[in-house]
Image (tube, rainbow, N blue to C red; front, side):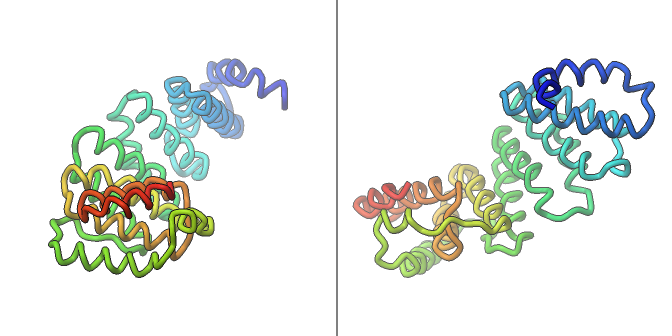
Length: 256
């Protein structure tokens, strides 16, 4: 096993040369080896190389979900991410995103490609699509998410004071010491909310305080995750920018 790991790329590349003459069981086994090689290449930031292995893995499965559904899901999801990061074959990336999202699989299995869809739409300047996709995913998770439309000052104030009550008298240190979140579904919702903030700021700025308020209440209710740093920083931004409360904004930023 250690020797195979050391020469994984060379071994898989050589075996791929003979894929056309392999029986089905060997093709399935090699598809998993290509997945392994692609993940290793991605970990080393060699994303263009990873794309080659992920694509070869899909070819070994005859580009079908019927042969090995779980491996195909991983290959497609990881290839989508590698293509986005390397800017390699974006048309294929979009086709794979559509393919995964069309599968009758649990929503959590669609998170990775939806995340890339949100980020790629943002990178392409499709701000409304990026924002809509992120918020819709949160709704499908059963989590609160506002509609993508302008928000009145009254609603912004209402959400702010609601969030202020939830935070109570916690200072920055107490806020940063909230329990760590372990619920996978809530983590995905918080992360998708985080992804929505840039598109929201650029295309629907009055909605930003609402999204941030929802995030902060989620942190207090369920716990903090990797998204919390950005959430608290954005809340500090909202306090300073929308409410001109520089002292509280600086204090909240200390929770990052």
